[in-house]
Image (cartoon, rainbow, N blue to C red; front, side, top):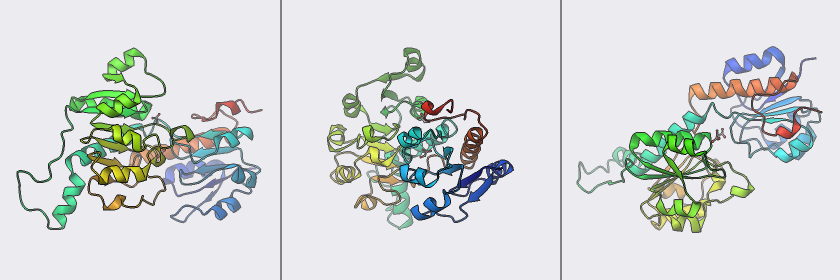
Length: 326
Ligand code: GLV
Ligand code: GLV
């Protein structure tokens, strides 16, 4: 019998075809997330699910799909999944690290440059006919080159962001759960720095930590108050790492110079007042959104899913405790 899998959004055709060779695929053809009810119904007879970061995969959903043998998330982050509940049921959870590292680092740099040099703000003014012509004191921003970059979370993406900073002759400081080996610090020319110290020193604070209860509102009112009034906050990781209301206040009051955000606390909703501010660049969760990267993510998510269904260890297993399967 061919396994049955639910794919919760349309993906690159090549990856779906690979999946269809081995499984009966129930694909969400609609170009929107499945509702909770639809998910609960369509998981019922499935052996596997290929889920998006917008799908909440909790114990209740796992109970609704008693045959479920694998949860393959189409993302590097997996905070949309209750991993503890999956582990308790012996269900492997997989993700797609590595393949989206460089694209997400690129997007982080787009936000750094845009926020500091006011590209989007200037674009809005230009289109609206508000450009007074070249002016000595109009739309001044801040230099990126030579500035201090503070990276919070030195995983794959944090390190890829640090590597790019070398071309801008920046000083790189970082805070992370685990300190890098000395030789890697040297290669990246990045030095370890306690969080509060990093917040006080950095001209750009960029977040690359995973989201969990432990990192909820890692950046709140106190942290924003520690930042320089000339500094920028960049978030391409997960929205709830930042207290978005507090950020709106800090941006409005000029407590910090600006921000570049790709992720939000309640996507696709924005905190009240955020969209009215000119000193923030808002991109719509585009970190991994290139043709090349999304194809690689799809291939990897399919590989992960098929591996488990075929009794092989998946390339990227999140919950090691379930392997080997009992
Ligand atoms: C995107 O946000 C991801 O976690 O892959
Ligand atoms: C993600 O790939 C990370 O480890 O930063």
